[in-house]
Length: 287
Length: 267
Image (cartoon, rainbow over all chains, first blue to last red):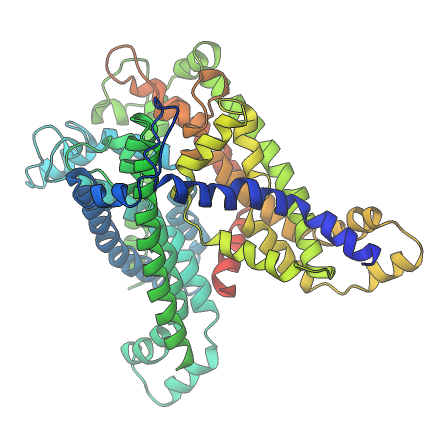
């Protein structure tokens, strides 16, 4: 091997080391742990086969947290995507002050999730401004605030999540809109197409790749919702999610084996969703 | 029509920035003030809470910890993502393709799967509850490698070849010839890594337990007031977490936007 090959390997070594120690090994280690009864207080642990997985599928807490995660994913993603697209369309054309609006809309998504969750904890609480607003509008908010009620806790976190992330996806849509050739619109105008017609026949089809990309990354992200649940509700009032369950069983009750099995179930669900969505992406791309 | 559009835009803008305005306003209230709307619009502002959290309690310590970890991780990523990206772009050796596929593979691994094993590994390596736990696993990241590799792919290699003919060492070529050319990509990388790390909660939370190494987001999430939650202090601490992000955002908006959209268009 030439000295150049050696240099190349030397330069790639930081990745190689990180890959082995902090990615591949943990990935396999946690798969292995999923098949053991490893708990903190037991020094010895043994292989238990699929026992953890079987137990999880009859664990009401886990199933509830999984159900909440699905509600979170299915509830937020369409809303976030549509609002983000509307915002992008609203500020796509150049006009005075455009940058200010773009920056303002985007700002929440680069702010710390912990900070946002703390702010909304107050705004949602009894006497908080969102609570007062809802009261003024006659919406009769739950007595102890939005986060301390089984009916509203999860949905309140979801609403905050939509508010926080629309600006980020708006930026992606703006990049997608920019890449649509102007000639297409000009040709459509010559042919006398209406605004709506142009949107349906040009904008929407050409935005499909970006839109699917947005849906894919948002799906992967939303399946792992954790921080806002930890800060705002600690999983109470029917708002526990899958990752919160993994944290709770793994690092509060130290049931490493059981938590690892739960993590792998979620991992497989995310992988399946990603594969389906990537399949769609390819299919649409061919047209 | 135009006025209607501006009214809509401004209305949305208010919704988007109000919570942050609220945070700053509460942090400027005197300690223990009720957060009523009358208090909110009262033109009375005091910095007393800030002088409080900067002189007593742990908030300043958390802030410094966040700076230490953020800077260490950012410097590490500039150096290592650059080296690795350069290696992928310019060198040929056995196993390179597999290693590059491993970057794309890791990019798709959801972080939640790492919670338990990373906690155990860090614990067994004796790194638990130290700065090292917050730095070592995060010194090189797949998105950064990908970004640098794509960028170097677009650069002509003539200057490197010329330097090589002149007898320059590989390290000299790496740092003196290629690195200066990569400044735009490395700037995007540095800003992205710093912001992500600055806001990071999950791993700093699970890999530490004592207040002496706690970062600001973790400190805020675990903040306990004396009786009820002390919102003025909590929001002043939150402002400490947000102000650096706002400054970076105002200074480097172009890089931040291009970093975000580059990933989307490529995929």
